[in-house]
Image 1 (cartoon, rainbow, N blue to C red):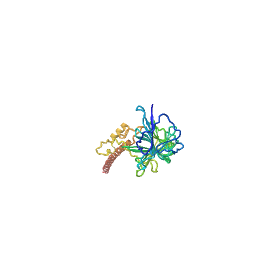
Image 2 (cartoon, helix red, strand yellow; image 1 turned 90 degrees about the vertical axis):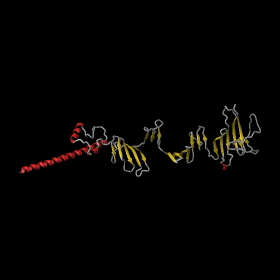
Image 3 (cartoon, one colour; image 1 turned 135 degrees about the vertical axis):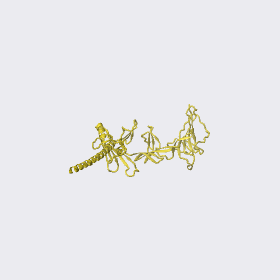
Image 4 (cartoon, helix red, strand yellow; image 1 turned 180 degrees about the vertical axis):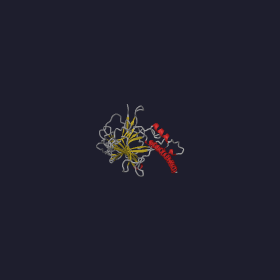
Length: 374
């Protein structure tokens, strides 16, 4: 059988960590009842008054109620104490408080300080815990006027403090150590403004069911997201937009936000429209392009070039261009430039040959005329 000893301590000698215990003057064995109200403590007197709801009071300058378990070591036998107020002065940091002390461990795991508001801590019949409310409707329900806040603080070499903060306008995850609001949700934000799939980890903005690692959804005929570089000198933002487009089949648009419309459009047929010039870093001209003008370049003659062209069925530098097949525009343009340079060289050579032939004919005609005149 387990036995417990209840000890009431009163007086001025009670310190914060221990109580001054005295030997009982009277021991009553057996069961006893008090028909009336009980005052315990040296200040109690014959004229003691009691509040209507008080059946017992412990009276003294410093009081505590100790629960001392005399069970053996093979059973739970920890001693506990209900502490009321500190022995030190307010100037020395003394507190008006009610605490539960683990006597054996020398710890005080639970304390209520004087003037704590009503319903500072409330446990409902459903086990819900209310902080600031007597009507908690969830496992933990926090109520405060103006704002509510949960502070998470880690100490030590990697110390940091985080706050979950809520007011009438926002819910915020705050790094209080660096004074940064990391994550903010505004009031009346639409459903599924931000969703992470529990199965795929896909992130959805505006959708509960993101079908890609990152999906932005909107119940409109167009949607876009903006990338902003706040320190850019002139234009700070670009919009990536998807819309039905003129054909109604879908069109992707790239628009630097400068009030002059999109700089690029790409439709579902693969047609691209660019509001400006196109410069590529694609494949270089395999035939050398401008190298044909070098004196050391081994250039085919007109006849050799023509023979190769008719034999293969395409311009030698350009290569085959088959109907309905995709082609590398940058590579083709470089090859066409090479063939154009060949053509101009051949034209210049043929022009020189024609000029020489014309001069020779003119000389022959002059000589023939001189002979006929004699």
